[in-house]
Length: 480
Length: 82
Image 1: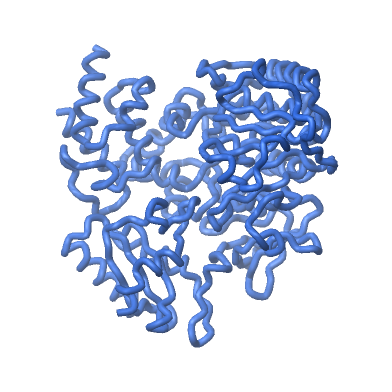
Image 2: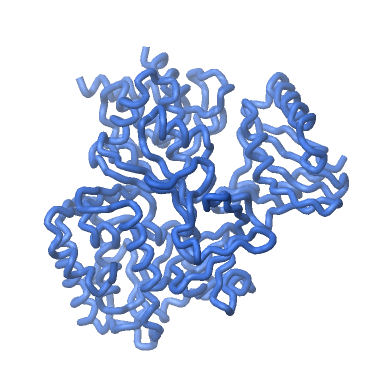
């Protein structure tokens, strides 16, 4: 895939359509040729207002046709679109935000006609490989601003099209925010490969599956866990699931968080679907994926380019590739950039992995979450959490280090903390402890029915455990 | 009637194997631990089981807090559709 050829190619797509709401709420279905024509017209309009190659252009829009047009128009001109997540306050996203650095800024309350002339002192970005700027909430839960590489994007899309045999017979449904760069990659891939695309919003996901009948979707595990729960007891599960997914699904990809092996196996056997786990980080792009030809449940598949993937002595996955998806952070909290983007061009993911004899990659946990016991043994809390999470009635469980006791501790959230529920969870925990090796035993535990939430500060923005805060919150109970 | 059928559907959505009993007074988030994915799955299954189209009702549905409240709402949508 290459952006130079994208416009001409998409104009010639015979079958490809785009179905999406306009900013005014009206649904439109247009051909790829229409999309390109409208994007070219907008590009001309932007240039007439003075937008030039390299100009920084701001955008904060919900999923809509205009979003896609602005994105393509900016690419056409060579302007750098900086896309803000819809729900955030601009200053919160990026404290360095200053409106006058943007040549133009488009948001939902504006129309193209109401935009003024280009800001006279707008930033110009010289690097021609910088395609756009996007924000990503990293594992820390704080937004980071990423400069996105044009070449890195092109290579990733080519890899995807090759690995999954994408063609104009395919169709895609996209339901996550377009401000998330992965979704924009999907838009480019559809236009390039001639695949029809439907863009919706998350609440409409399941209804859109039925009406738009996509042949592939990409989503977080929660989606598939919910489908699994709804149909696991269905005697005609395969037929029911097929109907629920629209009847035309060729494959589904999940990632962003671990998926339970039970769910993965149900989809791929009893439900007669193809659900594949993949692994990537926004800083470098997709790293590994299960494919039709090479898959192993419980792993994230084989590295796409094994020669780019290096495992450090401590197991950290380090990527060194010619064109990573991101050229670096344009905004991050202090020091974060140097921890991830090294001067030798390598990108440190912070994820701990393991390759098996046949080259399948398994994720073990986050490097910074590793607990080192007093005996110097390294423990991945995520692994113990997934074991304890399987205890019936347990909704959430965080495994922490108790410095007072010099032992592991667990905070277990149960579904309705009745005396009976607490007792059965405590019994199951005892059984776990009897089987576990000494350094994996849980020395102290707290059972509560107060779910970890973002509001309480016990979950990060990414809905991951904020172990530091969880420890602080329950320290008295753990250490007493 | 609607309540019984709805309770069955809610049970398919609630993830925990030891889910609390679904009552009219059960609150989706506080009592049943509903997430946003659970909510849209519930709506999708209601549409399927009751053979109604709730697309125009999403905003109102998302504000309903209890299972009983949802049952009443669905009854009225189903009655209007007839």
